[in-house]
Length: 292
Ligand code: SF4
Image 1 (cartoon, protein in one colour):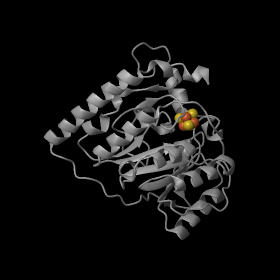
Image 2 (cartoon, rainbow, N blue to C red):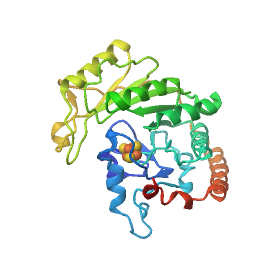
Image 3 (cartoon, helix red, strand yellow):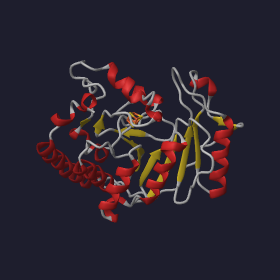
């Protein structure tokens, strides 16, 4: 689930995305699924490096598992908000269940961070989280979200999210492509809204955004207005009728463990990642972009 401002810092423990601190990408690459994907920045960025030997995006936007990245949050001692898979969609149909389960396991173990996991594959999010136990999924520091760009695709995702097992649920309404009308915010803990940016950006009307803000106010849901977007994103800024909306839900996180404990957990997670790589291997996924 890609965002333009993250391109310079993709795959890193720093991020310029307004609502997060870091990105964690144990999967790279994706395939388009709905109108919100039209100008996918992750694809544009990844394809720029296709064929560059040794580059993390040597295979462009082809879907692949990055086993070495699985334990990464356990290496970060400083607590932060982590956007999971800014350059992919964890719930893509070709990512194996066991791989997604391992991502959840790391999030549970490295519980001093907040995780923001966003998908457009809401049906799989719902199905898979219902298969897992509450202890594997339902934690206050693991926020599960869906992208919403329009009524046709987006509103159905919200219903799926409501039925998913989750500690916290959020919506990333970006790029907002039309007036969403009345949105059912029951069970939703956070709403982000933003317009599309970059060449060919589709317009977003102020009234659509204001209507969402008002619904969040009425439902007492924290509201984060990310950007107006447009071709000149910086110039357009992120004020809505003169106000910057930077609200987040409260979250209970764990205490950062002593270094020795953290290192021990990290080594166990590294061993699991190696074992998983032995079982799954990246090869079957390399050609997914052309095969689908
Ligand atoms: S789901 Fe997200 S990462 Fe995948 S193509 Fe669409 S915008 Fe890009």
